[in-house]
Image (cartoon, rainbow, N blue to C red; front, side):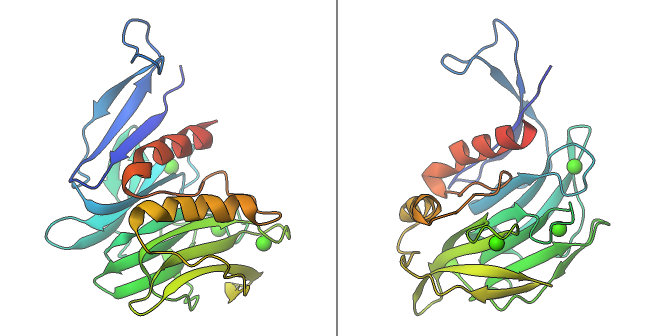
Length: 246
Ligand SMILES: [Ca+2]
Ligand SMILES: [Ca+2]
Ligand SMILES: [Ca+2]
């Protein structure tokens, strides 16, 4: 019986994991299924970013979570062990008001991730390479630090590797740029800056959709469709989990 995890996270301090059960009589009207909450130690977050991804390749979806926990911003990776979620202590800079997205930019079968936002390290945009042993390395990609941002992986140049679209605010300028993956942990600004984003959280989702659908050859990563914030967050996460579980 398929069980598709769903994580709810919105502007308020809500962060809960549910499992879907296809059980007759428990169905939600219009969805054909019901959800049962799974208790976790994941704190409630404001200005959150979340993404499902099987970072340890054990066949189940794990969680990358960032946001303002009240006492400060956090960024954590939770390993899924029999539907319990454990912080792997990845020692990542806490961020909020940004975005996270899994994507195997190295093509080695291990999910890497990108993160933007503001927090303990100021405004950041970073790419972390998965070392395959539950540790991650900042590749120092040289991306502009962004707040009020979003991002998406996609192979815009059809060369077989994932490139990165970023949009957000540097503190003095709005940025909307695609960074081309050159291999060997190198990314370079493609020069495609037709859309400048970060003006408002509600606009960013549409900017991502616009870029993902209008740039010739763009293919969003199956693990990381263009993400939304605030109002788009719940639906996008549901779509991500279902795509990943397919
Ligand atoms: Ca896993
Ligand atoms: Ca990888
Ligand atoms: Ca590419």
